[in-house]
Length: 240
Image 1 (cartoon, rainbow, N blue to C red):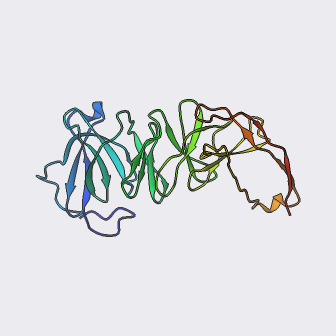
Image 2: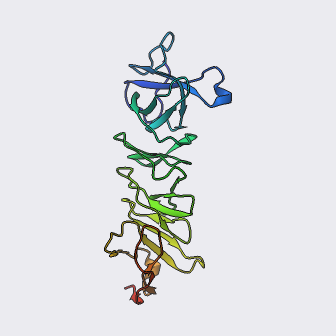
Image 3: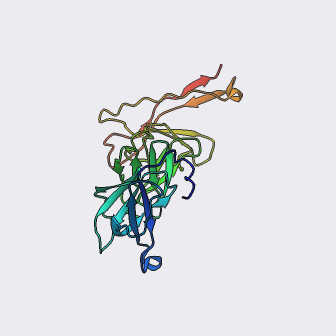
């Protein structure tokens, strides 16, 4: 029996991605399931004959899009196949981790939670981890939304001058720099119909002590934001 892969702590149900004739050309695979990791695969009938699979770390939940010969979509998690319905337009090249509870695909941006919830914010979206923590998604208009690292739910997209450098764990707040790289920009992706919002920021870097920072709020135009644009008054903060 082969040794257990890293991260597998016991012998339970297992799922294998298998090669099929012509798969190298079409990108299609088969799926074979066994009741116990290490069982002989010889003679075991596949549970899916033709699927496109987002491949990556085998310990992550992932998804499979049915092919012409077997159109059923599937959630692949915990060694089992569960029927599901995926969006029509997906690109299942790879799957990667956003947090211990959420995985994602890249182009087409499907988020997959540990409970089996699959979310797609937009068919043209791309999922991306933020360098400073958190995760976001980008649409084809260079707007960005947040991703909840517990549930995989996504927020609406808002216009930002640059790619997010950080996102809050619930996906509500995004942070980046201005076009001139001299300003730090925060965005609240959940501003309600009242137009009110609130953002908290804590200075953690000891180098910030004694520094003076100026803040102001800017309302950006957007098709889902029916309010006048403009700026708030400036607020000066000295870090103690």
